[in-house]
Length: 139
Image (cartoon, rainbow, N blue to C red; front, side, top):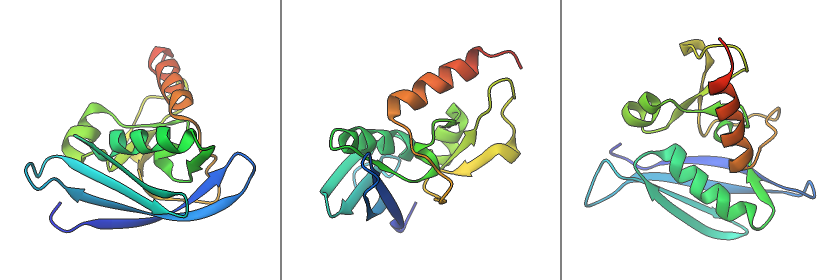
C-alpha cells in the first residue's frame, strides 16, 4: 500500500451515544509489509501495528472497549472474520461474513472498514467466540 488510506467510521457507545472517527492506514517505513493503523476521534488517538489491518483493528477495538466504545464497520461485526489468505494476501482488508453451517465463499466477502447503518458492532471476544463456533459447525 503506497499511499495512506483513510476511512471515516462511526463509533457507538454502549449508552447509544455516537461520535465519528477517522481510521488512517499506512505501511511501516522500515517494513512496508507492516500494517499501521491510527484512529483519531473525540476520544483521542489510538494506534496499532500488526501484519494485517484486521488484527490491528482488533487491537484498537480492545482499547476502545475499555471506554465503552465500538466502531461501526464490518470488521467489528460478530459474524465477520478473515481467513489466513485474506490476512496474508489482502492484508486483512477483506473478511468473510460467516453464517453457522454455511461454508465461506467469495460472495460472502466484505470490506473490513466498510460501514453500514445495519451493523451492530460486537466485542473482539464475541467475534472470536462466534468464529470458533462457525469453525466447529458442520458445513
